[in-house]
Length: 238
Ligand SMILES: Nc1ncnc2c1ncn2[C@@H]1O[C@H](COP(=O)(O)OP(=O)(O)OP(=O)(O)O)[C@@H](O)[C@H]1O
Ligand SMILES: C[C@H](N)[C@H](N)CCCCCC(=O)O
Ligand SMILES: [Mg+2]
Image (cartoon, protein in one colour):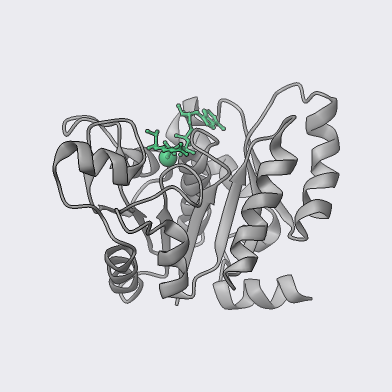
């Protein structure tokens, strides 16, 4: 199934920008793309959410969002405070699977990091990925502190029998400091998965045409327009 789940080592690491870069790259190669935000928190009904941001940057994607809660909190907490039903992993998997029947690629963005809870039973994006048997891309920060949380995230994926597709740095600084430069080598080493790309800081402020033109260069060849989850898995194993 052409579903890629996109998580991060936390909130604000650049999941949305990386989702847009992957979408733009696939669109440029003629693929149809759907983007599903499992649950959007901290955004009012009249404000653009993450899927609108992906569409603005990447272009003609099908955008879907299962629920929106106003408080800028974990979805389970925001749903509880709003007195509304939560989004459950099964809902995420079901919608992603349906989108996958109609698109070449479905990108599912979580909220915050991997274990952020969606419902009162402790359901997370990892449970949705398991239901979908989908690979999971981890967006990470560039600098000091990223080694620990990225390794923890990849370990958690592996402990659940999930397939960690690789790591992408969400915001690569114009002037990389010593830690960021060393992390390019150390991230693959500590996680055992490839570093698949890095989106430059400020990319989200580019005019959309510039974002779309540049996006394929930010991602490693296996994230190019020939993206294919099955092929990708094969290459990772090799
Ligand atoms: N490469 C980048 N270029 C420009 N802005 C960026 C970049 N990466 C992140 N940002 C900015 O940092 C903030 C957080 O990024 P983003 O929204 O992608 O995070 P996120 O991981 O998707 O967070 P959430 O958990 O809320 O979904 C946003 O304001 C975004 O515009
Ligand atoms: C509001 C924010 N931008 C995200 N949508 C939700 C982040 C939840 C993080 C919860 C946590 O890990 O403590
Ligand atoms: Mg986001």
